Image (cartoon, rainbow, N blue to C red; front, side):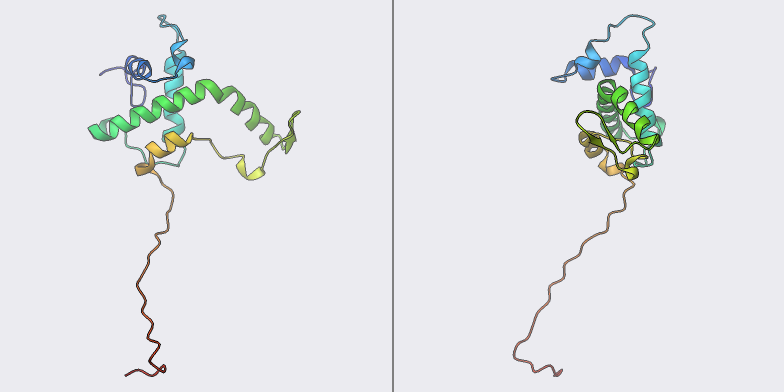
Length: 155
């Protein structure tokens, strides 16, 4: 389909969200011509996923059909997250950038190490696990036998 923004078009995203149990932040945006909010949400989500460094994502033309199913779903889910939380996230990141470590009535605490961290919802991270750039150290188990009857000398 033409008109993809990243991996999915606004029309296909509308179809995806029509099948999702809760997507009010998306479906409440009226489908008026010239309203760029849905396209902006998809573009912002794509940019975060593609340029985050957390994933090695293929370009649209290089993705397999199976990969595109996952990539479209992840982009939609992140765009919904961003519609719901981006304004709050921007305010918090702004406070962190100013060096604030405790803020607000509830005394939110910000770690300096989290300043460069871009939140990815767990569902989206799970969807994109096959593309993760995280270095995972494998853990191996070997069977070890012990011979109690041997006095330590090799036979």
